[in-house]
View 1 (cartoon, rainbow, N blue to C red):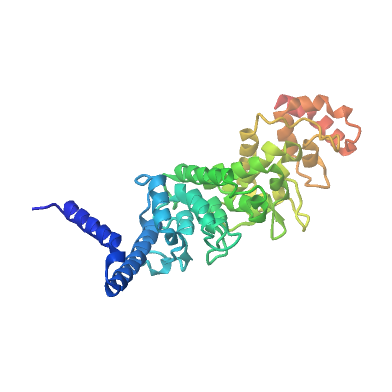
View 2: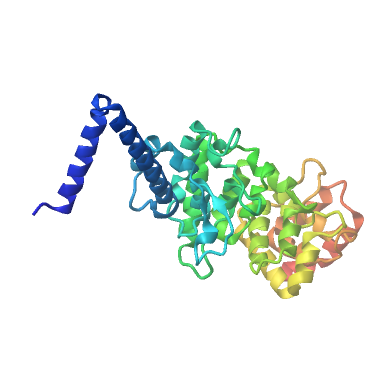
Length: 363
């Protein structure tokens, strides 16, 4: 008895033979063959689209296989699937394959193919003019694929947080290589805010490293990034605050990572984090950030003001809290011997540092 594979191959070969002799058939039979062929192509396109949405797995399938499928059935890339039809899915979203790959309701198995989808999709104008192959297509929440990719992370208590972060970062790096992710996208689509999560730290650090100035200028609803993360309703708000502050200290040590930057109401992130989380938890996390960036030199003068960063913390009109001053002086005691050289130093700060010198040396 012939095997199933053999029978399937025979059917495929017979179909190919019929298509090759189609022009030699009668007019009536040509019409029938074309109708059957159209129906088959339609069915295969649906199957291919469903494959890209739900079956594609980077551990099992190769880029060559996927690219060959797209070349054969290009409409598969524009196949829309309504995820509200899934009993276990609460999202009421109609998605393209590239969107589903970023959201990955099925388990984030096809994230590595996002760049390929965008590259091939741009050739096919998927999503419309200027949509970069569907990369800028928005979901029902108004988020495009770049924003979803920047923010994507596994469910709570998952053991694959770092793996997902790395996969998403790899996808972003390839999109950049293909010029489908541009530097201006970081600010245009608030990618710092989307990725300011402990679970997305590699992505956040990547964006900040590419455009450090975006960290300084980032605003959401008028609030600087540190203020926004402090006020956010996320259960991980303090973790997100730490991610932002560490990056700020690394790239802008002369401004103490913007922890004393004011919002439109005149509030500093330093004040807000103490108000929300209490003195002990707030200071523990602030100190952690400074320890993580211990190799960053903070005693250098700001070339614009000729002042040391710690003076921001000491100035009475700013916070009146000396915790930061004492911490920075213990961290970099050599600054004590440089203070007298700063012409613009506030006399009150001189008095405070001099008065406390004996205490700090014995601490």
